[in-house]
Image (tube, rainbow, N blue to C red):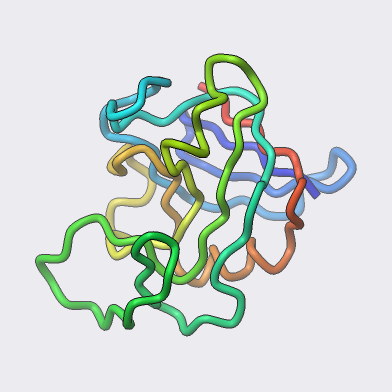
Length: 148
């Protein structure tokens, strides 16, 4: 299994041997595409799943510094929370090689209403139920392609 993400379509497609398995709505960065640390932009190019975090965590589990820290129950006014599961990406090209240091993830969100539009701080946001499904289907080491 591998992942293809389209910034233009705001979609993530799970592929298996060239065949589409599933497509999910996402949100990439509201600041657009970029590679600089602190830019709050989504990097593009080739990546690898370096780490999966949150196996078995309750839907809505809040992660801070990749550690579970309670459960989000739909409270308003929260910032950009990293919820439910984390799929951590490692850039395979010189321009995106800093993705681990930038903490670029695919993760669940408390802003599901904004999916389909660029609204994140650089990561790829997904519905919480969708990130659980994706997490369970991909392995560490799988290829991820983020395209404009």
